[in-house]
Every structure is written in C-alpha cells, then in structure tokens.
Length: 81
Image (cartoon, rainbow, N blue to C red; front, top):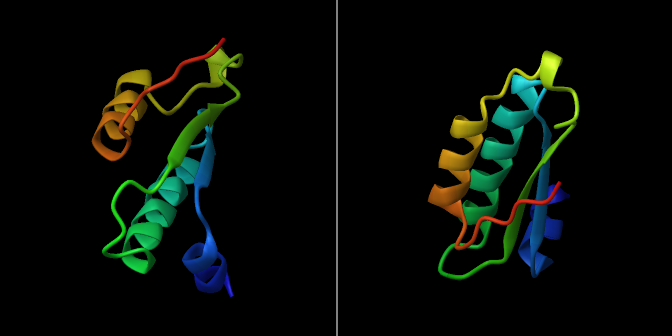
C-alpha cells in the first residue's frame, strides 16, 4: 500500500528524531524507496526534517551527518530554529 502512496505522491516530508539513529536510518531507507518507485521522475520535492533538536543532551544523530545527507539528496537545505 505504501508503494501506491509513493507512486501518487507529488512531494514528500521525511522526519527523523535526532535522538534516535534508527529513525534517521529509516528516513534514508524510505528516501531510497521513493527514488525507486518514482524512477525517471527528476526533481521530486523532498523535505528532510530533524525533530527533537531541542534535546541536545540526548542527540545521537550528528548535525554534520544529517546535513551531509541532506546536501546529497536535496536541492536546498533550509534550517529553522
């Protein structure tokens, strides 16, 4: 069923928790799935969002790692605080 949603989707929001590396890996895997399903469709709008950034003491996903991935998979990097 998720494939159907991805096939019909015109844009995607991938959210992960910076306190949970598993959610970051899951977002990366979902991104790969989107690209597989939307093959041949360049410029798919995808927004990556790191959640729980206020919990710096519990942060496990490094900022540099997340920003590096964002630069690889998106056209723009928008940061809000």
